[in-house]
Length: 182
Image 1 (cartoon, rainbow, N blue to C red):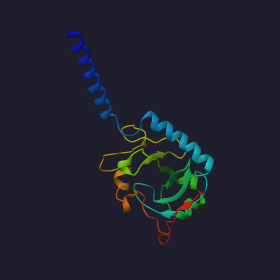
Image 2 (cartoon, one colour):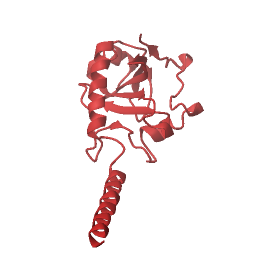
Image 3 (cartoon, rainbow, N blue to C red):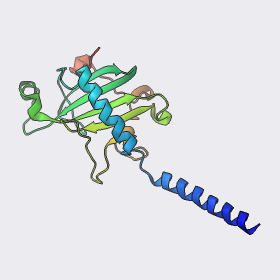
Image 4 (tube, one colour):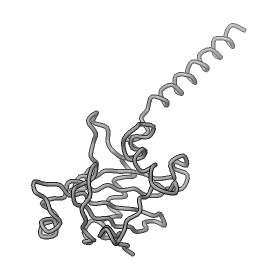
């Protein structure tokens, strides 16, 4: 009887410990998130999403002062790619003349059915221009459910997009049209 009670106590403690560790794990930056993001970058390269020029327009924080947005499908999943440009005295004309000089980051959201139903099933990642995954101030890789549950960050900001889609409307009249890549 004591042996059974001892084993039950150990099992319950292990179960609670594993649950507590899972609760402490951040919702982004896991090895699975990083692996998925690396594979996604390769697929973006193959589709030309990192090289096809698109409509440049003036933007603002937290992305770049100049940006361009492309939309496509990879493996049957909707993907939105935003190239973010920064630099001293940046203008659309300067970026158009030398995109590589001003490219600061590439932020991506890809629809993944069942991935995060509470937040419209988007996978988020922020890449450096070379395709490496960028990190936040705590050195956490920005891939996965980035800043889930926080008052600022990808999910918090995009949750305010109209219609619960997490996708902001882009207006041709504001020169912010999205380029669709097949």
